[in-house]
Image (cartoon, rainbow, N blue to C red):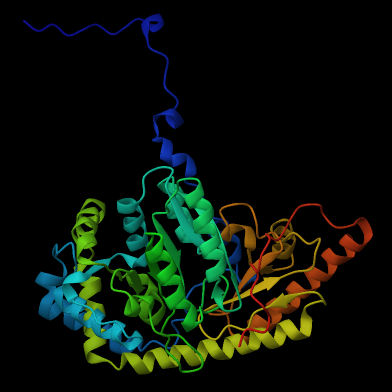
Length: 439
């Protein structure tokens, strides 16, 4: 007969295991990004936030979308509010192929996997490619969300420098040769070729072919992240890397061209990758939200989404122009920046001796926020750079924010002139900072 065991005496208990020791080793690399940590402060109304990359949704036809939502629930609620396919709604995958066709991509809907934002797609791609200690190549600087995913899976990031025309092929070749000499083959190159986040530059078309050839020669896969590709200010749409090579893993999103809160993104992958990606997606979310996908599908099918993208683009161009004019007016000598031809961001380099991470609390006290450059590197560089986002504030707020930033920089330079420059290195060797003369 079973007899319950009496409680152990106090002195017989095993020592309590601290909670932190129960976590997997990979959680050691999971830390809050500098940009996320800014949100609580930057969202205060008195602070002009030039930090976050929130899309400006003021131009969306909200009344029409409200009617669409009501009709979706009334007519298709039994499907929209139910579990769906882990790969995504079939009709939306067909429409995604039509969207990508604008960048020269010819795709099969069967090779599209819909995800909860392109961040999830990036996380899943990293999961199925990378073991702890594997090397991933990424532009320097690179998207902070990507760096977070790579760190979470314990991948080692090796940066490749950019100039005003994007990733430098010669430096990519040098990096791959150096790694090969160590017996290391990177799992993939992660690149944002169009209107880069955070650097704002665009990879020259002739370089795209060269980059693909270099990676193919070294047996390195390419992951192309392209959330901003349709948001060019000149009216030009650049050919996607995927349009040149069907083995490229392409990540897309409706966050920048429709509504970020719906969290609908996708990955276009080679057939050999698709099945593993779908399995990884199933384990993460079982299935992406059918309701959100069906709403996006209705929007694409029943609204002039191309004109809506043009409306967004015109608003962002106006804000970019306001920022560039303010930078010319209010920033001290020695500051340089690029001139983005699309997207959300300007990448700014400050004079020697100024540390943008150390300066940030003083900037917030002066009621302006930015993203310091160190958050966009995995190796400690970027202390003389910062990212300015022009997508969300009004042109008037942008001008005021840059004016405040200029005063903070002037104060920092006064300190540098009095006490001398910091000995901390701020720039890596090579053309890592985009030129202010980007066309």
